[in-house]
Length: 397
Image (cartoon, rainbow, N blue to C red; front, side, top):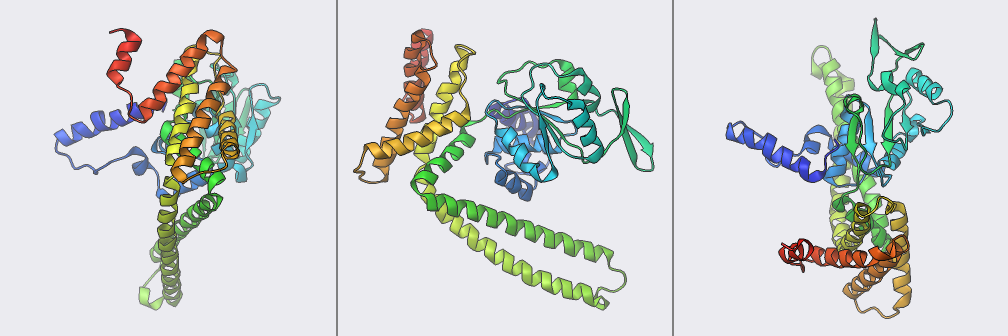
């Protein structure tokens, strides 16, 4: 949960898969935690609701949705917050922060009616009154009835109740008591997910029809595959409930024929949409160098917090800056000879824009350090930097 992508990958590859292979036990090739724990239909729904499409974010979503304990999400860039709001919007999500009034009354109503609750912007200490809810001290009353005691009140507990907690602190230190009662999930943005997100921004600005077509196809493919799963589940349910000979059940035979026709039609539509999506993705990929460079520059700004905790930059503000760079770089240069020149021009303009944007928040003595770090990270992303020499320059040995 709280660990980064590299640690998780190492944990799966070295601590889980390696001992199994040494013991000559059968294992799935190219095993992934998210692929094992989540259905493809669920992942597509999460992506449509704003979850970044990288594997790290998908693992986080699995921990949030499948975990036994309520999630506490480390979310300095507000990505998890937006995803939860959109995902639970149809279920009357209640949102509040630690300074809101009547927090416990809202929670008590939600527990009884089974509606989701989002507690955002918490600090390193949680309200002690939340302890029985986080600990899930649920009492089985028999005959399927559940209750929970919150403060002096004993409430009927609805299993549909969901409790989400987010914090904007990038490196919080929670007590062991909190860690044992909540699932801490690290939603700090990773380069792969941010690259795809910013690629969408630049393509939407430069080739709006490509991004619109991509969005339409993603929704179409997701709905089509969900429809196929629903048809399969319906058929299995009807087969399980059928009594006597299957050939004597005329309604089942008619339903099977209708389902077969619908399935073939949906399968064909999904196949056509996926082929079109491959072509659309290939056209979008031409802009990936711009998306990658913009992601690298965001992490340059994000690294400044190691110098001073005051140096924190919001992802929303950075995306707005990138959109402005796309528009202004286009206005500054009227003649563009090809796509590659346009991307190079955008990358150069945005690098300078990021430098000035960062300098406005820095002390004078740190501005030269920003320019050095920015230059080094850009060269590193293009494999033009000798890492050993750079480390020798930094550490002197």
